[in-house]
Amino acid sequence: MNTLLTGSTYATKHLEAWYHAILTQNVVVSHDCYHAAAKEQKEMLLQGNTENASYQLFFDLLKFRYAVFTEGLSITKDSFESINAYAIPSDLQLSYLYHYYNAIYYTALNKFDKADDYFEKAKSSLTSLTNVEQADFYYRYAVYHFQMQQPSQAIVNATKALDIFQTINDCERNVTSCLSVLGGAYVAVGHYEKAEELYYKAIDILQKLNEEPLLLHVRNNLGTLYANQDLSEQAIRQLSEVIEKMPKHYKALFLLAQENGKLGNIELANKYIQTGKEIVLQLDNEEYKHHFSILEANINEFELEQLDKIVQAGIHYFNEESLFSYTSEYCEKIATTYHKKLQFEKASEYFLKSIEANKKNERRL
Image (tube, rainbow, N blue to C red; front, side, top):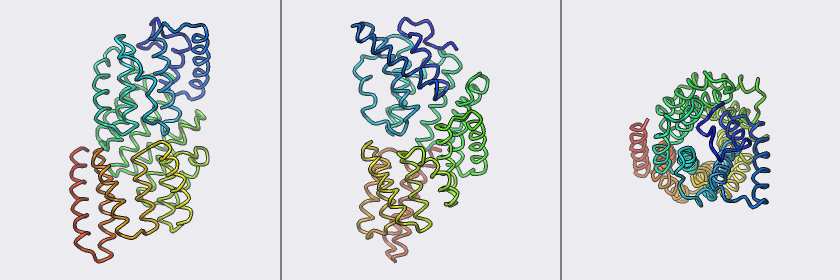
C-alpha cells in the first residue's frame, strides 16, 4: 500500500509497516510492528545515530498515533510532549502528520478550537494523500464533530470515509469504525433503530475478524444506545462485557453506574463511580470528573445546596467547551429536583438555562 510517506528518506521499512498497520487499524500487526520499530529506534540511538531528526519525529508521531489507537481513553495533556519538542517540520509528509496528529490530540482533550485549527491546516494537504490516508482523515474529522456534539457533520465525514474504505482491500476494520461513529451520531439525533442496525453490522464484521479490542468499543457504544432508551438491563449486559476486558474504560464505568442507579442498585453504582473517579483523576480528564461528580450527587441524593454547587461547576465547564447538550441535560435534571421540592423559582431558573443551552446545541447540529 503506497502512502504519502512512500519513498521518503526517513521512513524505514519498520516505520512504514507500522504506519500501514495503524492506518488499517490492525491491532495484532500494529503491535508487532511497534516492537520492531522500537527495537530499531533503540539500536539507532545506541549506535549514536541521532542526526536524522526527521526519523525521530516520525517515530514519535507514530508512537502517539499508536497510543490513540490502542489506548485512546488514556490520552492526557502530556501525551504530545515529546513531539512538541520539535520545530514544525518543513517536509510535506511530516508537516501533514504533525498538524493532523495535533488535531487528534486536542480532540482527545476536548480542546476543540485548537483541534479545528490543526484540522484546517492538515486539510490543505488532502489532495496529496492516498485514498486510505484521505479516508483516515475524514474518519477522524467525523470523530471530532461527534465529540463536538455536531452529529450532522459527523455523519457527513464518516460517510465520506466509509465510501472510500469500502473500496480498499484490508480496510474492513476501518469500515466498522465508521459504522460505529455513524451509529453514535444517529443516537445523538434519536434515530435509535438505525444506530442499532449499524452497530450490529460492525459487530458482525469484527467477530468474523476476531478483533476483540475494536469489538469492545462498539459494545460500549451499543450500551450507550440502550442507556439512552432507558433499557438499563440491556445496557448493563453490554457494558459489563466491556469492563471485564477493559477495566479502565471510564466511559463504560460511568454508564454502568448510571444504569445501576436507575435500577436502584446504589451500592454497585457507587462502586463504579469511585473506580471511575480514580481513573479520570489520574488522567486529569476534566469532563468526566464533572460527569461522575454530578452522577454521584444525584444517585446519593445530596443536599440541594451541595448538588447545586456541583452542577454549577459542571455547567461552567460544559459551557466553556461548548458541550451544550450536557448543560441542557443537567440543568433539566436539577430543575426537576427543585420542582419536586416545591422550589419553583429555582426550578424555573434551571429550566430556562436548559432551554437556552438546548437552543445553542440545536444551532450546531
